[in-house]
Image (cartoon, rainbow, N blue to C red; front, side, top):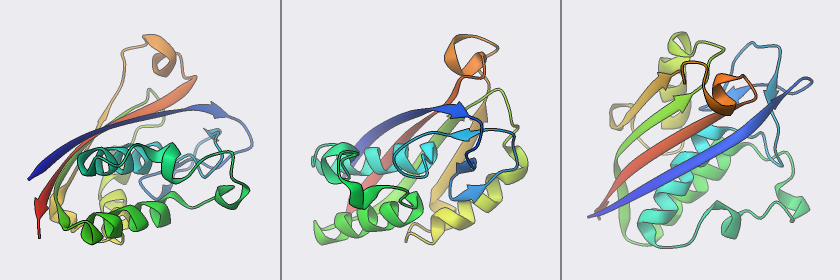
Length: 156
């Protein structure tokens, strides 16, 4: 059994789609990044990679490599879930928190779980919490969105 912790954050900007947990959420701004900037997928990937002891997202998908430009993060997460299997582990639990003042994410959480389950993690093994930062910090000022994830890997 192994435990991993992940974190990610991205700036909000006009002219980008807002993708969180593999779901496009209607909003006047989206997250900036080399890929689709899906903070939730990135935090989960970081947690799994950490539990495997294989570095971090940047070592697997460097933003200096043009082949990852505009990548769909759910597909990257699918690759990381497979990487866990290749290394003899399966994801047995994922607990996450997304921090944003706006938009409200509660109406999209079930859709996010469904989208994330397409990576090979069953819906029943994914927990997503949506929180605000009570107006404090970069998330509180609406400058960006952050996500945290913890995962448990079990030996296959």
